[in-house]
Length: 256
Ligand code: PGA
Image 1 (cartoon, rainbow, N blue to C red):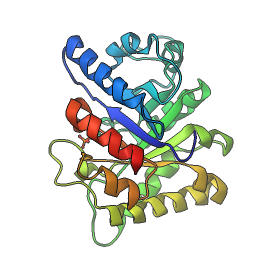
Image 2 (cartoon, helix red, strand yellow):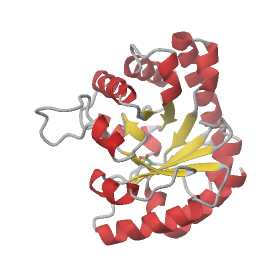
Image 3 (cartoon, rainbow, N blue to C red):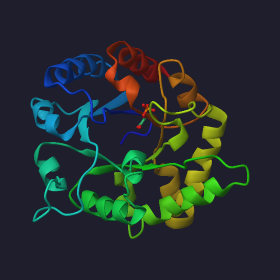
């Protein structure tokens, strides 16, 4: 991945309900995204829509990803989707360990199994980490370090080039969020994440690993997160379903 391209992940979650609306948002996003040379936009729609979106997808600055994947490639796993199935459809990216999945019981150990299988199958993993609250005595930092260590256990230095970190503080994510993070705190967190990665994989890998931010990103805070928060890109939920916001965010990101 070219280091200076901003990575913009659009996480649609379980939206929109109709295929017609999904197509409309997809087409609008694609139209803007393909024209921007300094951003790499990745739409992660509900898995049912993936197949319809990966047809005629030229390689370049726009692609389709998945929101989750199973930790095995085939077999008796009712309801699951395999990394190889995604690869077969031309999917390159997968979000893993999103807080909404962790809140439903997905542990870092399970996330780790998924990370391993996804990388083995040739996917690039967008690994989400984030604390539920920011206490004043710094326990949240140990929590983040623990998520990183457990989710990436057994991953080789070489395979870290297929991992993108996404810092998403749970208190900033989704409709119930209190607020977005602020760029200054975010910058400190980026440094902390790199430090934790450096302890496991060494400085060189840590410096090369991209770190994104997610949580209440919108057209008003995009610029400051990218410029002052010093992240390599953004993971966007709600705003990624609103055509006008998408356009603005992408254009701002492209010049940030
Ligand atoms: P949000 O979601 O932008 O709606 O806060 C971000 C995410 O969950 O990835």
